[in-house]
Image (cartoon, rainbow, N blue to C red):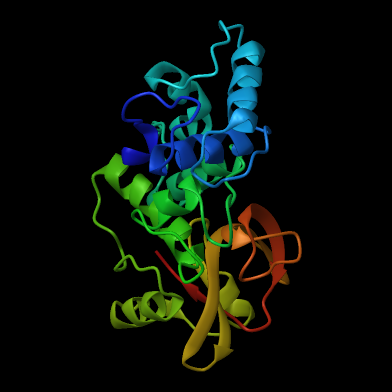
Length: 245
């Protein structure tokens, strides 16, 4: 996983992508620095503070071992979960909650940072909205653990997910009370804007008659489709369709 590997050592005066990645992870670890790819005095001071927190000798340089500590949250999110007899949907939610516990969020700008690149196959930037990428990543982790095929075609597009689910007989449009009883952990919700356009997606943790719980990416406390983090939310059924896995 490229996000977890650092080539060489980052030192004062260095510039480039490796410096930017170190700055991202310093900021994600609570040591906010400017993410500009320039290792100046502030970045070196943040590295020293991080070293001090972990009882390490403070030289202000980042090599492979220190970068491993910086990226510990992502390593924890990627750890394999033993199935324990759980079906695909429940294991998908176990992975989603494992990610949630590490507080994935953007850093360095809209839709940017190592968590976004993880979920979006190396892409980041304003045009790379990552809600579908997050949901599919967790589903894929569960499928790989179980040795199962993906029940839908993974995509970064909510519209493409809906199309794939429709083709495979897995799409549940605007469910009534009886239809809501079919919604299970690990299903995907897709927020409908028009009959053929969906703007946000996430994973269903549990569903009741009037509302459902989720874990979803690229959202925030307001439920925005262009937020900045992974959140657990409670949602109603208005304008919601579902993908049954």
